[in-house]
Length: 197
Image 1 (cartoon, rainbow, N blue to C red):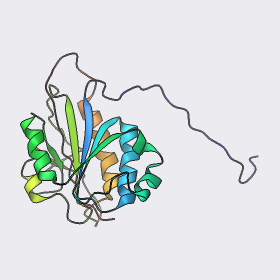
Image 2: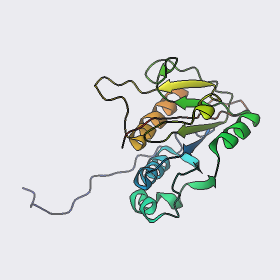
Image 3: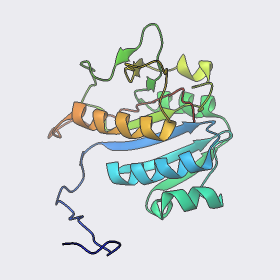
C-alpha cells in the first residue's frame, strides 16, 4: 500500500532519437499575447524536436519571466529569434522555397485528420501559430500554400493555442512518416490557429 504523499516517478525515456531526423521543424508565433502559452509552446516544441521558434510582433520572448516559468527550461533548449513583422518573415521564407501550411479553420481548410499531401522533398517545416483571439494575420494567411484545421466536435470553435500547437506538431510528424533517403529542398509549414485562452 502506497503512503499518501510519498514521491514517485514513473517516467522512463524511450529511445526514439529525432522524430524526423532529416526534416527540420520550426515554429512561427504570430502576435501571440500570453507569455504562459508561449512558454508551454516552447516546452512542447522541445519534446517534438522543433529546431527554432520565430517570435513575431507582440509575441513574448523567453526574455519574459512568465515564458521562462511555464517553459520549465525548454527555452534554453530550443533556438529562437524575434521578428517585428510576421508578414515580412513569411514572404522571406517563401522566397527561400519553404512550404507554408496555415493551421486555421476556414471555408477551404483541410482537417488534420484527413490526408494532408506534403511533399517529402522539402527539408524545413515551419508551423505558424496565430493570435489567441483573432487568429493569423489575414495577409500572412494569404501567403500559405495550404490551410489545415483541427476538427471541433463540440460547441467551442477553437482550442488553446499551446494545445493546438501540440496536436498539430505531432500530427504533422505522423503524416510525414519515416524519413526518406533522398531530397534536398525544404518545407515550411505555417500553422496558424485562432485560439481562445
